[in-house]
Image (tube, rainbow, N blue to C red; front, side):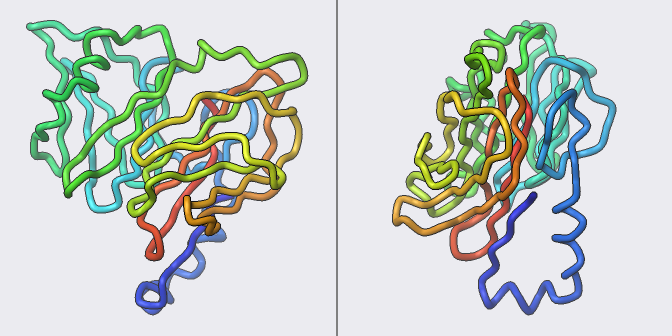
Length: 239
């Protein structure tokens, strides 16, 4: 269920790994319930806490730490949830990239995550890049959205470099849009098998995911990452 689009310059570099899309297309996450189309990282995760969707193509690995617990994320491989606690002076949070501290830890969005996080919720964090540095965006907790009967919830996360905004279509109908580095809000969609397409603000198709199963009562994040006209990755995460 993972889609690729390669420029001619990159294509010749990847001839030896042509089998990789076949592996990723059949990958399933280890989260609970429903279809999960993302090639998720393996590991011992929790049922609640923070999940990282790492979309910064030039920056990895990224590690979010607090006290003796941490969550390490690699590009285009969403993590499971890790239960971290509210920040304190004794146990501050930190964010590192390639084992180097990043200035992002002093940003308002990081402080809001560290100080206001409820460890019993399920929160997705999008890692994207700006001027070569890591930035993070915080999605609303999945528990805050309750789909109608017979429906699921779907939102869009945009970490695609070169896209001011991307738009999500389901079965050719636009349902959500997201500026670069942000999550959209959840929207109701009919449960069942759907076809997902993400387009840039220029109307160009960037990602196509066919025959995605979304289950009644579940909520999902469609994510897109990489760089336009170079290397595009994407998938569907159950939240």
